[in-house]
Length: 37
Image (cartoon, rainbow, N blue to C red; front, side):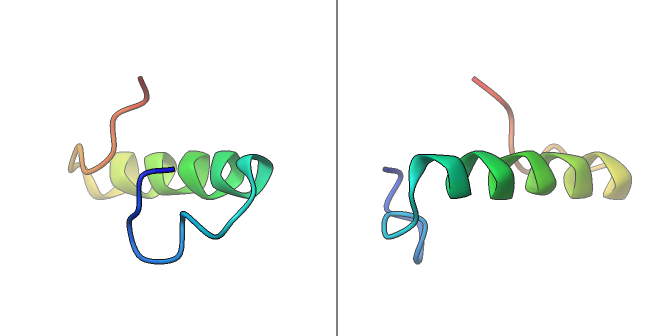
């Protein structure tokens, strides 16, 4: 979908899970690395 690494190979559900985890990690680090659209 985004073509970032192997994200394009994952399914929509997998991307959603990884996306959510990435957002949580970013918030914990205090850095807005990924912003939910």
